[in-house]
Structure formats: structure tokens, C-alpha cells
Length: 305
Image 1: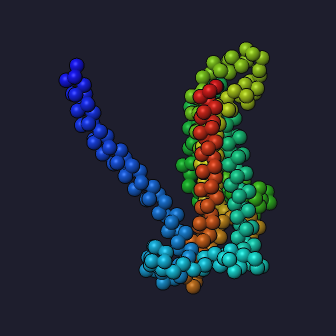
Image 2: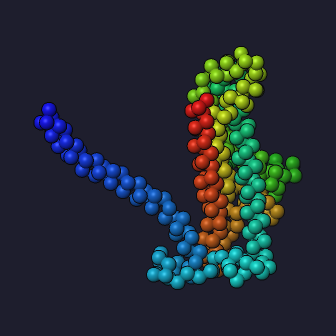
Image 3: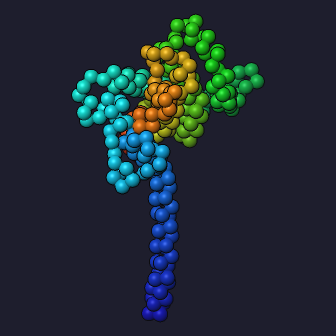
């Protein structure tokens, strides 16, 4: 008996170093990957405080390689000495920021609503449209992403001119909704397909309608997929540049267009572009952190149900 205990303890001692090595390797890889992913954000933030020589030399460490200055924030009217003064640049930045917020959040929310309803129908009912079945209809939606945006430029330009939607937020919301709707449909179709049909059948037996079962039973379980779809749609629409530059002129221009406008005949204003880029990235970071909690909450709620 004692020999067996001694043997087990010896094997535990032999196992512990290998376990610690494995854990160290895993955490080392994760830390390295985190540094790689966060470095572009760090570079963008520090560039907004650099002068032109520091940008060209590639200095990275504040107060070591270079002395931080408020060049980028001053160009936006957001530095400590200009924040309380009138600034046309700051007003323009806030206008573009508001345009991006309305266009991205409005189109993402609309795409999630329409896409969830479409995906629920494709996952629960059998459709026939000519030779097309459910799988063909789903692939048809996804195939819309194959076309490059430049192919759709002229048709949308002519259509929006006829509908008087050029340089309007409503026009951007409608176009952005169409561009991200196929992705939302595919994500939500798989989400609804993983939910047992017996839950809805039980709800129908209890007296709920199809819509009642969808709202009270299915949607809470599918919440993680809806939040994930919203985040993906939000990122895609927030960063969209081509159609925003093509279909807007002054009233509805968005942040990506303003970031690209920092290049000119005098060169690139790196500090201004970096400050604008960081201001455009920051809301997505905050939204991702906040909605991650809702994803976990939705998964827990689905597990309970």
C-alpha cells in the first residue's frame, strides 16, 4: 500500500513540471498574440502624439523615443487648450461621427431584425421558388457578397439620384442593410437550426401562436447569435468607405471619408489621420467590450431554458 502511494506521488511530481511547462507555453502564445493584435491600436494612438520627424523615424515609446505633443488632438479641436474654444474642425468631426453612428447602428439593427425573421423562416419552413429550395435560397443570399462593390456603383448612383437619396443618411442605412443582410441571414440560420423544434411545439400546445413562440421562446435563446451578428454588421458598416465616398458629398459623409481626406498635395497629416483613426476605432472597442457581456448573458439564459 505504501509503495503504491509512493509511486503515485512520484508520478504526480513528474507530471507537475510538464503541466507547468504546457501552461507557460499556452499563456506565452496568448500574450504574444494579444500583443500582435493590440499593436496597431497602440501605434495609431502614439502616432497621434508624434511630430513628423518622429513618425518618419518610427519612434514608438513615448518619453523615450519622442516627446508626446497634442498635434493630432489639436487638429481635431480636442486638445486641452482647444477643447473649450470654438472649432469648425471639431464641429465637422462630430458631424461625421454622428453620421457614422446613425448609419452603422441603424443599418445593423435593421439587418438583424430582417435577417433573423428570414433565417427563422428558412430554418423552420420548407419553401419552393421555381427550382430553388431552402438551401438554394440561402446560397442565393450569400452569393450577393461575390459581386465587388465597384460593380454596383453605377446602378446605385443612378437609382439614388432618381429616388433623391444621394447624400442622405436614409440612403446609407438602406444600402448598408443590403450589404450586411446576407451575413446576418447565414449566421442566424445556423443559430435557429441548433434550437430544438420541440420547444416551439410545446409552446404551441400551451396556446401560444407561432409569433408568440418566436418572441418568448426562440429569441431569448438566439440572443448570442443576434448580438454576434449585430457586432459583425456594425464593424462592416462603420468602416465602409467606398459607397460613403460615392453617394455622399457634404451632409451625410462618414468618418472613414474624413480619415481618407487627410491626404493632400502637401503630404499626409499623419497625426491628424492617427487621431481620427483612433477616434473611429474607440467606439467599436467599447461596444465590443459591452456587448460581450450580453453574449455571455444570452448563452447562460439559453442554457437555463
